[in-house]
Image (tube, rainbow, N blue to C red; front, side, top):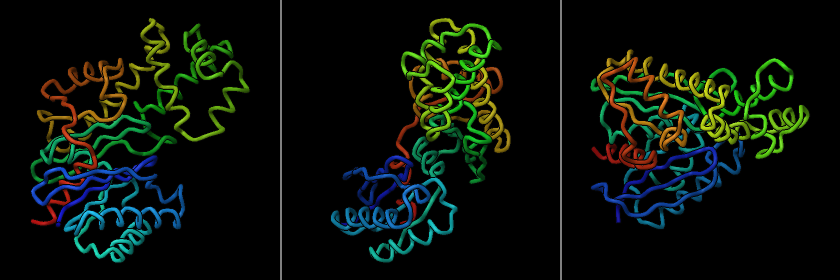
Length: 296
């Protein structure tokens, strides 16, 4: 049987979807992290062979789109190309994770995609095929409005209170009770002793504190909502999509969070004719749709 497939290669897991040549769902499976820098070349190549082995068990893969962060990395492309050669998959393409996410979210229609998860980015495409992006610079110089930014700003508010530089905040008690961060030493070890996912995990505490009426938490959410709105305005302005649609993607925006509500208010003020819509398909589904286009 011939089929098409899409791969969403994420930092923690990889999702693979298989569809008929007409785009009807067949099966899906999840694998380990698709991150060359963190897992190393040997494990990355083993993952590619595991995925292509799964595809071979389904039949003949007529077209494949691989979506991943760092798709412009020449070495990632080289290793992926070698794996495709070994598997006998001749029709394939490599795309950025933001590209497949936009394609799935709007099912190929023009518009923007705003992602707010551990990091943040806005990516858009207009009817002429022109694309633009804002954000996606990583947590050291960007990622405003992300889970990392919320956790970082929350930890900063706690540190300011401990130093006597800021007023009282419910975040201090929440960080101590939920994360065990009840001292300067504990906060420093937590913030600097692990990856950015640690601070992103603290984002829900900022939401909880804001729901209790905490001024510091509320200010953090308002600031980061403006950061996200700015990304959308930048992309929409460059592409002439001020009257278009923006899909909201990622855990901070797909649920009924205070950050989402503040973002919608900010966009209503700055882009009153912009429509915010939920994502229609997953990023892996978007990759499968892009694979289908290869057959044309």
